[in-house]
Length: 233
Image (cartoon, rainbow, N blue to C red; front, side, top):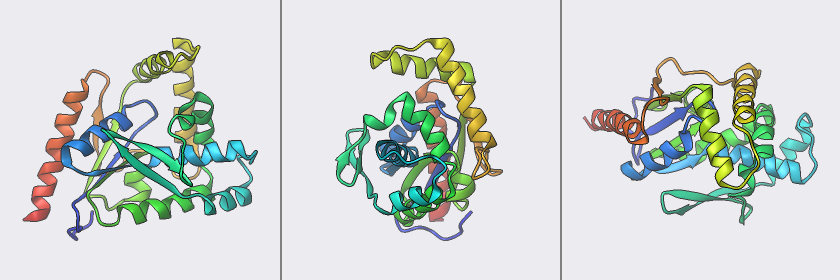
């Protein structure tokens, strides 16, 4: 971890598998701490969406690199969360479909995409006072983050949460199929050659299977505030 006190606070990294509640927890924790939430998963989803719209194959690294060089990804705060903009266009809803979710896992494993977004993420978070969530924030993007969490839950619980989310949007899905897709994505994320999903050695593991959102938030907030206090001493 970095011994240098950053200008605006510490960097908090929250990693974990799909459906563990990272986005929800990160938004609420950022609000409690007065920090900025940088949704790295949304950034990869944005690239996947643009690649899909332009007919770029997942394994066409040259085309993906060229695509990334044309994208300006930004976040517009809105209440607890934020809208996701690509070159000024709001893609917040378009990046959350099941099709884009599955494509994102493959797109995010491509080295040119990871390199391009890594540079963006480091630039956005360099002064601290930010919370980032994803698959490899604490292991690759910010291995020197002052606070690291690995948020997880059972595949069954994550599948149930995803099913309820999709059903609420009116999508025709089944619980069994949704759980199967969660398990499939876990396998893809853990087996990929580039930046696979894994827990950083110095990350605090938090299993949210049987914890409420408030219980997870309270645990994380206490941990972060203790670290902030330590940085100021």
